[in-house]
Image (cartoon, rainbow, N blue to C red; front, top):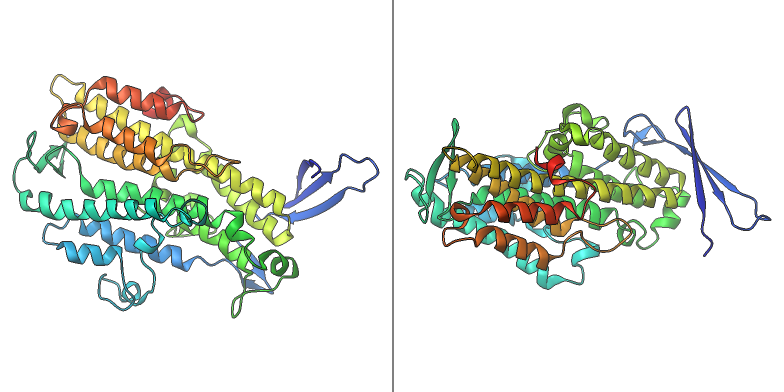
Length: 406
């Protein structure tokens, strides 16, 4: 296959892609990509962007993590929210109850990482169910008891109250941050942006011909790309211009905003959005090379968000402990968020590969290291452990511990 060099020129919203062959006798092809200013695409004056399923699952996730902070909740009720069955009254919204979607069915369920890896999928789904069970069995019964090393209960974090396990973990934070990786990141980066999904069946032929899915306004390929977009922007007030209200959910959208708010990483939110937009425009134009280039950019940047926040929370927790009077509640909250982001590293994606930045085995080892400095877990964690974990994560990415940790 001949290597192609791409020259991109943007003129009044049109992106011209020149494909120059190594053979001087070949005539260059030029494709015009109409790259809009916002994520808005139409066909015959009808909207073609739809990711309602992603919005539904994010809303389900919001109710689930809220339920984990209600000490009157039963394990069965929370499990039912995780593995919702169509028509069951698991949520406060009738629309969610009527849905045939569930969180569990898309947890560690990407085509690229888990289609042929059902063993790890089962282990990962079981982790979430175990955290739910532990919250109900260990933390809820001690909701009004003061926590101590080796004893679950409540602990002050400034003006807030945290509810922790005997080893200092907030299980609700493990579920919340773990779903960022196992659901949002895995589905976006390793499922819907993958060629195995985008180009499945007759998708290329249909997209080239403008043949829409039955009863829909969009081609299947357009829809798959939009579904990836939905896991990042599904709850934004203006989904066509979502960076105006980053933090619209408690999952990936929130932490793209948090990383954007760090001066060391300013601009990352727009870079992610622009790649999503240009990739979608390339699909409309039938330029699959540009589409795939944008997918690689999205994979790199969203993976970086996960890595940055993992290091951030380890270092913030360390700072909370490194005080004349250690702030244990603040530290344990930070470490629990960090635990969830470390867990999510196994769902990241190195551009140009079919591999995460960190394997499941590496992630499991990191989490063991975090918890095994003493019999009481986070109560015993050593600064050297926090620093070594931070360095190990940062060195795989293009940032330093100092940049991410501040």
